[in-house]
Length: 314
Image (cartoon, rainbow, N blue to C red):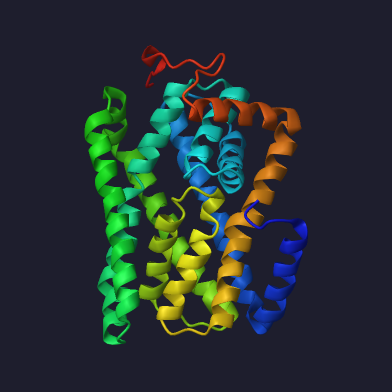
């Protein structure tokens, strides 16, 4: 797990609870906002799968997403483990062909670009300008690198689009209604991400600006793409360094980082585990994990079709 043991989790929760004091309402709002956005994420993927002709139930799609978050948080997968777990889960529960799942996730990632771009624009136009005016050259330098990596992610995705977009993907992209809904949900999810950092900051006594919250959001995206479960070590060190350079006190920074991790790593993983166990049990979890690992390793999972003729829009 991201936090090494149950005793460490309990210790962090106890320390965070003492540190938050009167800001607990802000923190509850941050938790509610995170899970509301995860439900929206489930709606988006469910709609995409339905458009592809797969009559997956919403709760199977949502369970796959939260289980994917759990899988990311316990495996060093550079965030790819969650996607393979999602594919394995909907195949086990609804026999969705692998090609259609890959297409749905690819299209979903594509509709994330406007949201990521919006956060990057806010971070550059507001956050970096505030930092330069406040004379934080180190933070301006590190944040500029983070922005460059974030924009590089968008550039690489676009190159991937030009190389891999199939006829079916073009049909999805040209579906104005579906694309508008998917992009709108993506933007809302990323605005939630900024707002969550702001609310956690208020809970621990830090009044982050919009630009600062945006820098933390885009930096979290970049720092999470590291070869450790959920970017453990990289995320904590990176966010702490950025907040220190912003001039915030270390004790408040530690509370913010722990508070964020409790939501996006611990609580999300627990919800994913509960959903998986309630909708299929430990045997299904083991089987989905086995298939996900075989897919990551480039091995054809038994019974999962990857024949391109299996893709069919309705």
